[in-house]
Image 1 (cartoon, helix red, strand yellow):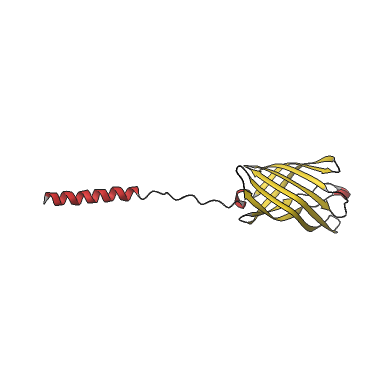
Image 2 (cartoon, rainbow, N blue to C red):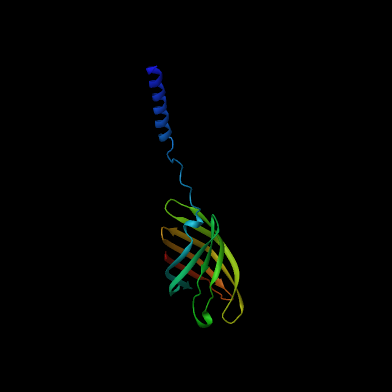
Length: 162
C-alpha cells in the first residue's frame, strides 16, 4: 500500500513539474509593420538646389503617415516665398523595404496638383524620390518640377523624429 501511495505522489509531482515548465511564453513577438515604425513628424534642415545654386529653406517639418503596412504618404512642407512660393503637397504610396540598418523607401516618379496662394491650380512632378529612415533620423531626396518652371529643384532634407 505504501508503494502505491508513493508512486501516486511521484506521478503527481512529475506532472506538476512538467506542467509548470511547459507554461512559459516562448512565442515570438509579432513584428510591427514597417510603415508603423516610421510614421510621424521629422524636423530638420531642407536644402534646395536649382541649376547648381544652393539655397536653404531653413528648418522644415516633413510628415509621414501610413498608407498601408508597407507604404507611406509623405507631406512636403511649403517652401519659398512671394511669387516663388510652393505650397505644401503630398506624395502618396512610397513603398518601403527593410534593410540591414535602415528602412528605405523609393519612388521613381509621382505627379499631382496643388492650389497656390493665388488660388491657381499648379501641377507638380517628383522624380527619384528616396527616403531613408535610420532610427529617429530620416534623409529625403527628390527632384521637383513645379508648374511651368523650366528647371528641376533638387531637394535634400535631413530630420529627426519629434
